[in-house]
Length: 171
Image (cartoon, rainbow, N blue to C red; front, side, top):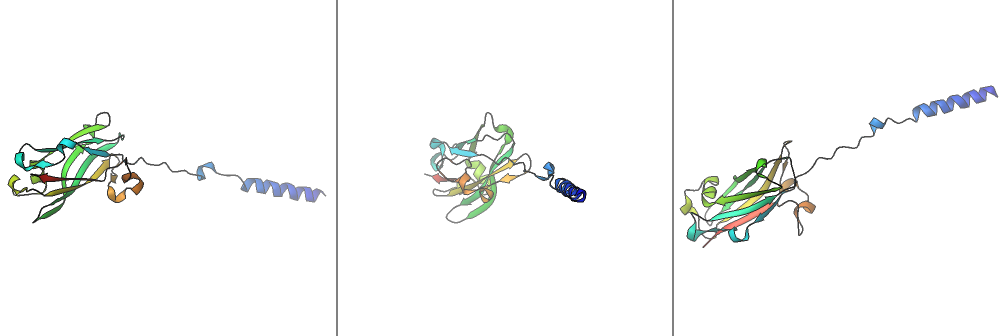
């Protein structure tokens, strides 16, 4: 009988030792914060006007709740009837430009000419399109763009990330 008690005691002791959990072994990862970037074009300044091209501007407000923005770049393409230029940075906002979650951006015709290496402002014609992608670089080096953002973030009535901005040259 004593032998049975000893065996039972040893069995429970061994079960107790091997049943312990290492709480450090259960790891829940720290989720990294993504980028929140909404760009809203000013309705009155949403295209370049050829009639007064030297003073015409595209203006927009960029909104973000992120405090870890390094920069926001608008990268894209210039498309005319005769030419297409792609993958050029047209506009860049440093993270320091955001005050209370808002920054103002202004793009001129000269900016378009310089970014897409056009011959001059006279190269801009009615109907030319500028198609831009939003690329957000965070202070930890991660870059958020339409290519790596979920549809639930960039689609819908009020998306938290504006993936594309488009404007054109009008008369």
